[in-house]
Structures are given as C-alpha cells and as structure tokens.
Length: 126
Image (tube, rainbow, N blue to C red; front, side):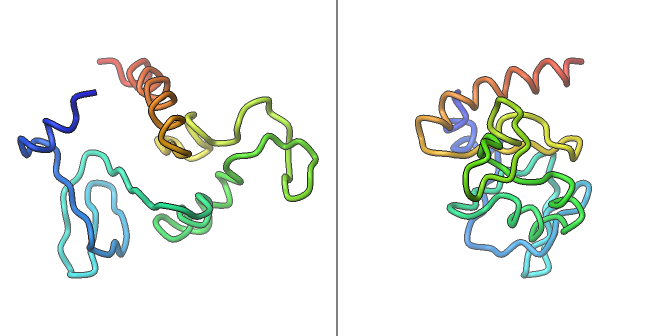
C-alpha cells in the first residue's frame, strides 16, 4: 500500500515498452543493450501461462522445476495434478527459491498480495 506515491517520487523505477532479453542476479537486461540494476523485478506479463513466461524470462529448466501454475490437480481435463489443496505455485514460494507468482483478476491480486507480503516479510526479517 502506498507504492503509487513511491513511484511518483521516483524511489521505485518503472519501465515499460522495452523488451527484456534476460535477467541476471542483479540486473534486467533490455533489448537496447541497457542493463538496469534491480533489487526486485515485477514483470507484468498480462495474459498467458506463467510457466511459459518463466521459460522465456529465466530458462526452461527453471520452468520445468516450477511446474504448472493455477489449478488444484483435481483430475479434471487439462489439470495434471497432483492434488495439493491450494492453487499450484500461486502466492507461495515456488520450487525455485526466491521466485513467487501473483496473478489473477484485480480482486485476487489485491487480496492475495497482502498474504504474499506477510510471507515475504516473515522470511526476510532482518
């Protein structure tokens, strides 16, 4: 909460309309050749399969390790399982340490972003 003002004040950088070539440990590398130092990257991808985005942004091995996002593993057509009782890889740390996904509609994003923030705060307490 309050991030809009922090963006306006210039304390959080926002970049759009620039293709990302790859991410490194501390930078975002753009198609222009520019490398932007970053502590965290929020990549608003729009619609698409999150596992596909992970393969494009990181690599296929990481995407495979993460596995599917969304779905409960209910055994319904197109839902590969396993049943874990929660949405797979959403608002929890994935099998790739330090990688978390958030998504969904505005209502889901607003509600679950708070729960995700609490989890991050607990894990990264100084």
